[in-house]
Image (cartoon, rainbow, N blue to C red):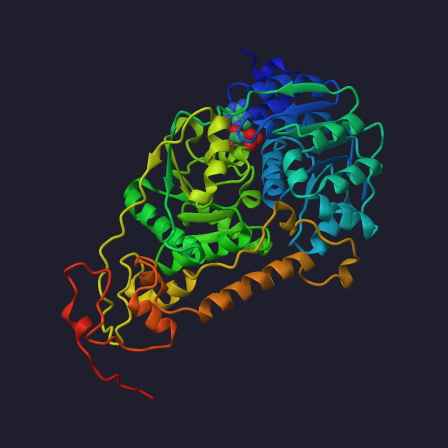
Length: 519
Ligand code: AMP
């Protein structure tokens, strides 16, 4: 087995590696570092968690050790699909370059241009950027790319998903032909193959086995339930999610909850918060400061539940996550592997629970085909017996046990079915600004604004057709009480059956009374 000391790395780099606590290079490092140090182009096919970041940062630091940065002409470029990933690469650079005087700048959306301009003006050795923000700087005339000696593309497959490939091609064309390219992707889609054929020169192809399709330390569960009505699927799923979390008890120290669409990330986080749980959303439309704070909170344990989109959570290295919950079955089976790989890391035990609807069968099949294993099935958790809301005088249905009475109205609002708004990866474009001078650009990206408008519109729509949803969703559809309310009716009548309470109907629910007005 190779040691770092056998890889021809500079003593300063070796010192940093040893301070980082690494004993030996990982397979991708072992294979990619030597050709990268020789100046060869490298095509690395590896996922996050394999040590691929160090596989390109170590040779980069080594190579840049000699020479000096010139104003506005970075000597190397690392392109990442998301802000979080770029920030993570910057952190890795700081670790591995700690014994050197190399400088770096992080160019990501959602951060003011001014500070970034200053750094670039001074001259940096490494520019770590999302493609959109990099091109923005370039178009503002603040950045020259002729000095780039090494260009790294990280997570190219995710760039493809996000629609960044044209930007990447353009950036390739803006850098010198003589540059060295280190190109990393978890998969080799035909479009990625095309790019590498066009822009890499006789690359050394290094490939590490896909991360064991599912680590043996991850216990998996699939919970399929049939919604009582199609338009209630989302709200019933949110109830099920809360029950799953409750059922896991103390074993659930923290969890990443994945949704397929940004609008659901917001709705799920809101519903969990309103049920008194410690949850926060993260997706591409959120302000960068908020995203950073949320992630920091999750990393340091002050935030328990992180509700995320695939793109926002992609590549994040959070070592100790006890649970991953798929609020939605991912539509790409590879995403399932990526998602559940957030738990059970470094030999720790982890649990991955997937909530599914019958309509998700084909996606479940695709996942099982990829895993070459069947996901263990589990029944949906039982609803806790409901208790009446204290002071419930209007005869509305009792509050579900998993929505505290105090937060009932709010929880109901959070549990209305969300409007189905497409959230394709390409829509997650907070990192892909329109190519306009900053001064003329609206504060928010058009796509972002549209998505936000959709979301708030959906919330507003949800709030209007509100009553007693959280209890209603536990009840068979179209009960007399529900259809009465749907017609704008008010209090219950003695002759109407109270549905859903078995033999234990609290006496006050069958009593008639006069409502009191307070204003
Ligand atoms: P990455 O795949 O780059 O996201 O890296 C995943 C994790 O592996 C990070 O937490 C790194 O700090 C860690 N790591 C990278 N290289 C090594 C190594 N040679 N030995 C142990 N841990 C490593």
